[in-house]
Length: 389
View 1 (cartoon, rainbow, N blue to C red):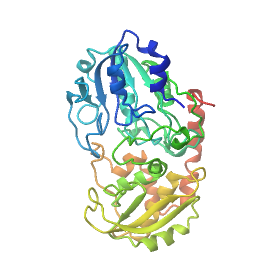
View 2 (view 1 turned 180 degrees about the horizontal axis):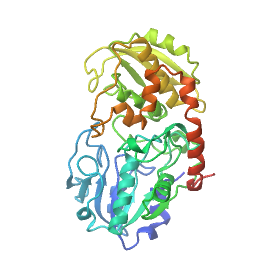
View 3 (view 1 turned 180 degrees about the vertical axis):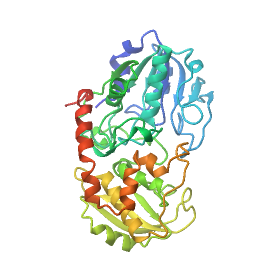
View 4 (view 1 turned 90 degrees about the vertical axis):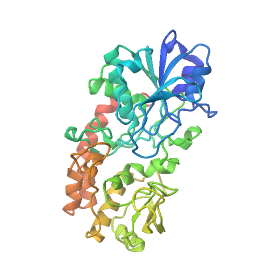
């Protein structure tokens, strides 16, 4: 199994031959020996790297959560000019690309619509088109496999930096496949090349690749986190801790007002597949309810192939609201710098799910409402799948 980074270095240097290269990376941009892409490019005699760019959380993992970040500095390791693409500037400015002929994107995604890295890619692709630069994606695995899709399609009136295009919460695509889809289906139309992986199959979870897992962001510590994330990320839009400030973010959820055992019993009514909810109490060290004792659950997945993270997240949030209607509430704006929408609507890409939960819709009815959109999306994505279609 080789990532696009390793394929480029070993056999595809022709893709950047003679070009001044700008590299978009984060801490997880490593090869199978944990060597970082920025260092590999900088030390390679045939690569002319002239600039570095970092998404949310930075090139080397400098920042936590949704902090507004530095705009430009010099990378401590290479002394190259480096630019943040999160905060005030999310799309490379013309002056950032003056010494760049080709932009190379090498970032590990999580397989979930709301993760900002794929929109950093999309905006950089737009900048590449506008400035006449080539854009190259070094493909990496979807850590939660490339088969399953789940959730509603984003509605374009809810477009934001955690959802720019009508794709479902769990999209089942690699960043390279998404790049082709964004470029052709959604009209970016830059000069695009994807350096494909070798040996990746759609049914693989990340451990199956035997590649090293490096946290792509500070609150994504393990592959187990990525498995539950398409559902528990919705807690960011409610007065419920999504586990930030614990050692198992997104696997642990709760709030001071929750009785863990009562919540577990309520969830048994949903007959959710391949998941066990373990009651616990926890004390977040930062973020929501920092320093307070919370009651909640840890999500333990017993069979990833059958587990449905998005509907599990909906079931969990619905159960909390039913039991604790006086304490539960929706978080107020802003969220990802969106000031005119409730965060839950920004995250889910629609006001429809929130209204369904408020109206007491069943989990089965909510999931059934996703089917037509998923059929449409699965057909639309088909031409852009690069691996064992």
